[in-house]
Length: 450
Image 1: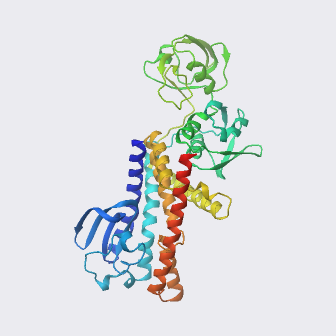
Image 2: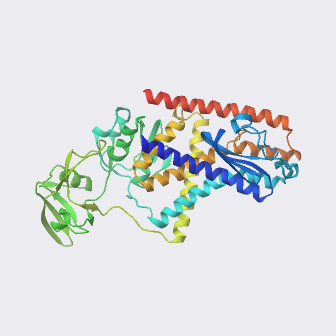
Image 3: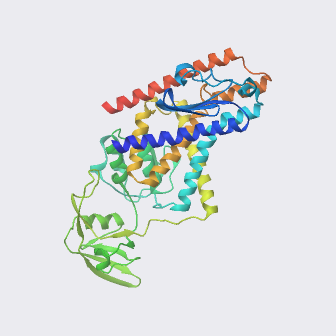
């Protein structure tokens, strides 16, 4: 629970700060008077003033805002934005006094910063750790004990089946498959080679979903040894990188999954591995060290065997600067497409509004990503940053897309909409956004009690 809360605070804190800083810095650069920069809505918990701008950290942590001269009573106005600023207003530096291009730059700066953050994260990960992947979408084994009833159709998958797409999004490696199983919600469609389609419902329970994503389906990987760890049993037995295991304990093995499942059930018991090394066939006896399983989601026995060998199938190569930039741009673009397609399915009725999640869902998914490690958490942060950017561009007043529509209308009409019309549309937009938030929160609560 503490990890989930901390993850939510980090995710919302970073993304809101980055988004609002975009509005703030561009408004300042084009000469608009910024009255207040606030993280959160409502009255301030912490407040200070520097120059002409008030800086607040407010008590409702569901967003943030930049209050600019000329818009101080528009948007989510009044008490929701903490009331009027105490700073005197310079009419000549009001928002509406600036050229259309400058105002559009200010409005779009927030979503631009969110996209740039995602690009920076993906690029940095490419430089720092590369893109470690298991380059397959072929299924090895479906573990019935880790597949919840609503996803039981996964049991129809057989060894060698290749997953082509999930919810219309092409999957290129096993990490793509796990990401969908972990982060998608509601009904999920898996397209399998051979023109087969499998439809499942993902579990709402965090642990059930994590168990499914990590252990429910295993990828098909050759039984070839990669890294041999330290002085663990594998090294002491003489196993080397590149060895292909063909038999374990007298049984033929056809995949890495076959190997580790046999090792798991032989703690402190010798097991003979038959390996092919070059032109030779060797029989090596290895005694797995006994380990205790502390993860209740794991498919391993409570006491399992461990030899300290990893598969050779995982690809992990650091990228050059140029490759990392291309990778960052590609990943960012792909995630924008995925988010747009998700919204399209919702608008066209191909997805249910019951799948819409709110802050509780965000907290749960943040915690799940954090439990999978820093790299997975950063990938989630990048994807969620893109999601916020796309959502903010919806043409709903109070969102950035709504304000952009006001400016587009002004450019077409060659005169701005009246303040009264803008205010009425903004109030209507606020009602729409609040209704969406109520639906999302209701879905969250219902999921908790199902």
